[in-house]
Image: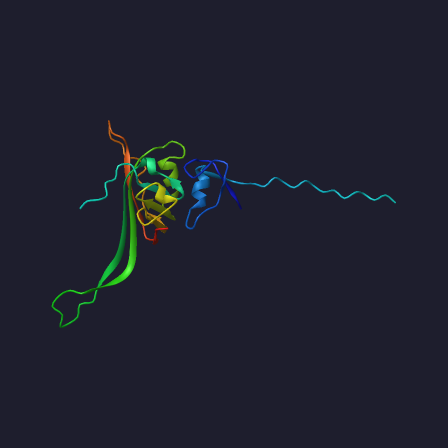
Length: 52
Length: 139
């Protein structure tokens, strides 16, 4: 799971946030200091249908 | 000779959130609990070190705005976190012998005054983080 900075009290907004030891990540998420960085969904691969 | 006068230099980070601009006082206390080991025959009390028991006390202006004091602390009550204090803001990122950074990892926030209102005064709170492991970073 990766996180992205929202608040400039944590760092530069938009940068990836790497939690340090002991940091309560849930508290940061709850109050919007960071957000989960969700990877874009992979495009669906469809197999070509074989026609006999 | 007094050599440390704090004007606006110290830096404070609570749970990775900089609260330097809300903080007016920070005290980091490194305590080794005293266990008495005085025995018969002794004429003075003697102590040996027991468990370490660390504490960080902060005085903060209370603000309920987004990303401010309340938002930083509200979800930390009853949990453990990391608090960093340095005598300079630069010491928070680049510590040195003259700008040491004190990091308390795994410290517990027992209580948070959620409102402290007095007519005509800025609202302030005092909080104490207890326990955890204190590390002094100097490089």
